[in-house]
Figure 1: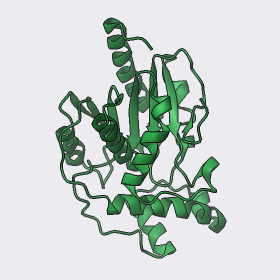
Figure 2 (figure 1 turned 180 degrees about the vertical axis):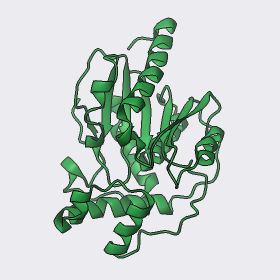
Figure 3 (figure 1 turned 120 degrees about the vertical axis):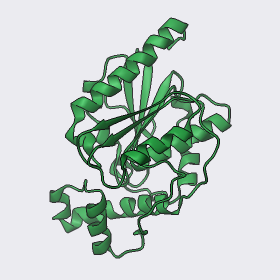
Figure 4 (figure 1 turned 180 degrees about the horizontal axis):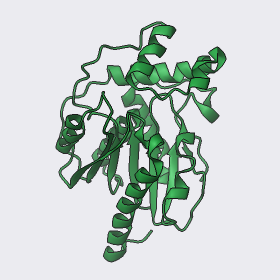
Length: 258
């Protein structure tokens, strides 16, 4: 099924498990375009494409987490027809977590597992001052100081930065204005990934996700900073392959059809 909200760079109709991947702030589905090559044939990567970037550049980005999650809950429903997991990096972790909450509250199919990366849980307050109202130069400088991740060739080209800024600023605004309280734990297991040198997301923030689930919980750290998954792709995909293998094995044992 075709959708502007999901890109599948390598279709695997016989896969037992779908992995929905949610991008970081300002990022698009292409961040996950090569992941299928590092995952087993039993997994189909479904990269989520948000409005305002890449193939959806002509659409206005969504500036509110609750609104965005509501739209995703409607648009992804037709794709969640076989067992699936959510993976979200940075802002994507918040979106994936909140979407899992909405699906659970509606009594719909929920992920077999929630995998969150490089982000504190939503109920933990941000100790950094907000930046979404800064002028462009100050905003870009602060993004680079905190997170990095903007390629040098993009930062050196004003026209390219002008294309990136609207979605990046909208995503940061959405994150900074989203401040939920601690809520009832989710029913599915949570695995948390993080970079050992990520200054904004220390180990304590990764461990804080433990209160978000009533099921199994584990933390896996990788060498690198906030974008460790770009520095250590083979290690990240190897770990994801192990998680997927455990889930597929359990589904097979339980006789759950794909």
